[in-house]
Amino acid sequence: MSDNYQFGVRGTPEYVRACCEASLKRLDVSYIDLYYQHRVDVSVPIEDTIGELKKLVNEGKIRYIGLSEASVDTIRRAHAVHPITAVQMEYSLWCREIENEIIPLCRQLGIGIVSYSPLGRGFFGGKAVVESLSAESLLYTHPRFNGENLEKNKLLYGKLANLAAKHACTVPQLALAWLLHQDNYIVPIPGTTQVKNLDINIRSLDVMLTEEDLKEICDAVPIDEVCGDREFALFAKYVWHYANTPAK
Image (cartoon, rainbow, N blue to C red; front, side, top):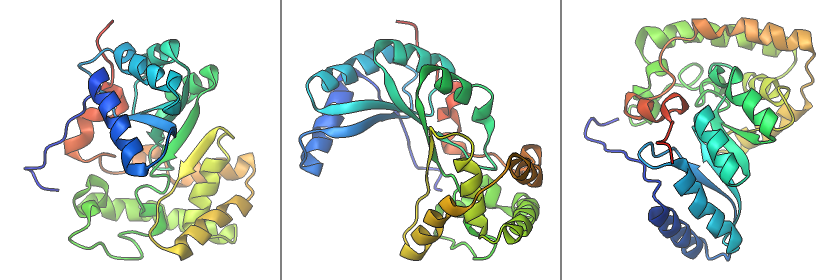
């Protein structure tokens, strides 16, 4: 990823409304089912952002409100303004940091978790392991897909591949099945550009796992043995750990 690339987050009420109106126009729809604040603007009280989204709900322009990469404090404060329906977080076998704080909080508040990158940004689908990465791919510069980090992570893939053979499924199916067994309010959103991969992912629903199986899978991919940061350096300051907003 180019060092010149710039990225920012805006959560002001005016910007929130303008973005929603623009989305409605582009999509040519009268309302949006689930509308996220995708990353948190730490310069704006979350009450201001959610307050505007609440107005959009009352106006019938959106039905449900979601957050992405929000901290525990931000989720609590947002939920107090208007019920939050879903929190989108990175969650996979090699990214389990939300298990100690975010998942218990969402369970307590009745908020669903939408798991993005459930296959470890394609790693458990074989990217950089069974298929090479193009130099044009963003993953080519990702910390976990480079150099010594990648070589060490490949060992974890191999362990999971052995377990997948034991369960008569593919590696991505086992990785998704593990996630689907965590709780019924956790929904993974694996992405793909190929129909064959979509079919493979759907069949993960047929993989049944016991508590012993789940532990064995976790033990095969110990989180402290995953090498490399989970996020590009450019986006590291926008992850949920740093997503607290000013007091209202």
